[in-house]
Image (cartoon, rainbow, N blue to C red):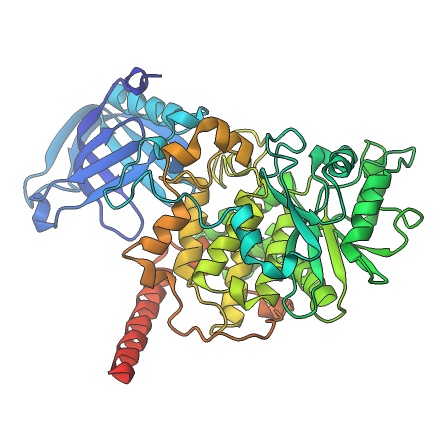
Length: 551
């Protein structure tokens, strides 16, 4: 596709830009295949020059209005020299996935409508190879560099404690057994590839139980999968039962944490899904923890963002809107379910299977948070990014579907769901409750939230490793995680107060312990900006103090 086909007006002079935390600017607006560029006039009232470069993929909604003008405009005129305007002009309001709201006042109705149509078309490209990561070539990165932090094969080789009981299987080398799993997975050593193929047919989407975590001290494990396809006739699969028996080995019991309510799990049988019955999985105890997903989670985000953008409400009304959004309830449920999982492994010394329906959303959310709670290796900057790579990118979270739109879009909801944003919010709650225990900063969480919805890198493209392989993402784009670790801004992604602890960090999930993530949801308000400046000053003081101590 030629991007020029969708750009009838490439640039417009005399445009007024209004954006949060900045005075209005007058300048030139340009649109390209992937970006909106605004450049202001240096001479305008002594203001310093500035540019705004906005990735079109970051635009969630476009609202336009056109009006006829005949009068005087004094916003940018010199004193005593009001500017007469006539004809038509238009206003485009751009609502971004990072929750910014920009306004462009464009002279000329036709120019305004052309720009709006171009933005609407180019911000919603469906073809992966036409997206910006395939065109992004920063000088400090090379396409021949290592892509990703660690492959499943490398992770297995380094985890020598696995080698006695677990093996690396390439049964999915061509993605035919499970299209959303990576090529290699870790499974019990005594389970053959033929058994894995048969077990995969008994799990939704072919997502048979695979290893994702081994406890460093007691050797207990977390495995994850999709729901079993027992159906209304209570079908069985001997290979699946044998696989789960091999997971617990000589232990007398394991737990299944199902992220659906018992009623939802029962209803799933009517549509071909189901759960592990006591008669067939006698050594596994099932625990149900209902976690919202999909449309309910997306609608919760929309309500929260609407509440955060409402400046007319008094405090009581605003708090009522916040509560009605139920976002913090979802945070609470995610952290409490992850705490339950960690408790089963850390304190009870039991292995756990985690799944919901598809095994690509709440399952990954809970397993990731549990590892953050238990494992100090996952709390460093490198460890956290490697955890996200294993548990979200390689494990098949459908980023392209879930992050197609954020909270402003007028499009009908399809597959959107902010489950990855919920994970980052939960990680922020842990970071706030344990300010010394996590080696990364809030700045990293904010960057990841932005990159998941609109990125110059290929890490969050597509919905699975198979789709990335077909699209050539590894060969033709750069890796976000590698870029973050090499970045000149790396220090800002590190927590200067970090002190490693080998202990588990158990979050408080009482309502009074959980707070709205102001750094994200209220990021574009003056109050939050002042708080950021104060935090940056404190950070600089800590860094300077450390330098003095070291010298």
